[in-house]
Length: 299
Length: 242
Image (cartoon, rainbow over all chains, first blue to last red; front, side, top):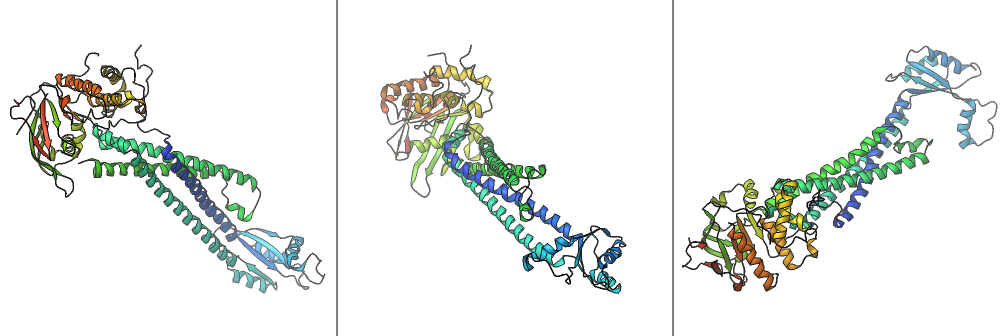
């Protein structure tokens, strides 16, 4: 048996777990964690805003004020609306629920009998159809009905502004985090190469082509960037999973927390982080090694 | 020692030729001044001179680590100023270099360090394993193949560095103060090792400040203040004035 029979694998020229790379690896992992949270929040804010926007755009709220002369005004308004081809459904809010909406201002005391609450009708319309509110209100008035129509335009405009502000901040945060990642990777690559300068010199001396050395470092740093990105992204997904469990059933602002149980889209998006980090690290190492070789090593 | 694992190179041409070469660092004075000589293929040469005389600079020009400020250097018949950058690795594989600080990769064991030039050249592991083992035995490191450089003695490191320099059967071996970090006894053994390599056809040039190490029959070049002198009675078997 030969003395080298059990030497199946060559030792790596660049060991994977070098202690000198560890601090930067941890920093990259944290940045990847933040980038994943930021990226998924952006996506979540867009999809939530889109869904809310769609809900608002396809609904009208009609407020009908009953009178002594026409006690069934709400029914008459309903029948007018039912004849409109673009109306899908009409739902009248429970009067008790309507009364409860006033409780924060008027307290729990029942309203006097002579004060009648307006009836509130929630009307669903076909998507993409724009109702002319003025025409509709005129039609009600001509029928002797005191009804006003709200297409939520004001609320929708305010909502759009708020959502745009949140999204701008999230995108800005993501850009800053990713710039920090790219800068940290370039710094880590240069520091890593500087610590391994002797290896570069020796490889050059024994006749390694520049591409060989560049590929060696590029692969090593790409793998390192991928690992840091992967650990950071997985940690972010785990946190989001538990946040999703805690806030399950919550409404409103909680919808902005990315729901990773809703499908593979969020996970696929998170998977982009390690891939992009690997790409930046590999490219950065490739360029830095070639620059070092041509600027300093080659005569 | 085991039988020699390296082959020889019979062609008859100059390995290295310097013509009126000068070299300076930046805007400083020339450290090499109008140096001209040829190294015959298969010759054994020693370069001596005091510290700061320019020995290392001269060797760096030989192994393409620096460019001259003026003059012409011909390596294996090729003008080095005309060599394409892509051809430099190929030329470097025809040379073995041993430096005073060994330059062993600390996280690779002796076997891997010595096998590095073959690995870089794309030789399959199966094809070089036995060669590396027999060379390590030949230089007396048969039982230290798995040792990491930090655990080696000065002499062992030096022999590992020499083994790495010769494993790919270079046509020229350039050694800069190879005995600088070892005691006299090991120094003499290393010189015998170089002589053995030379006997098998490798052109050898060794820079040293220790005149007692120079064996009889070897060409002795002296560098002083950047000026090279070669004994006129040298008959051309080794270095010669141009």
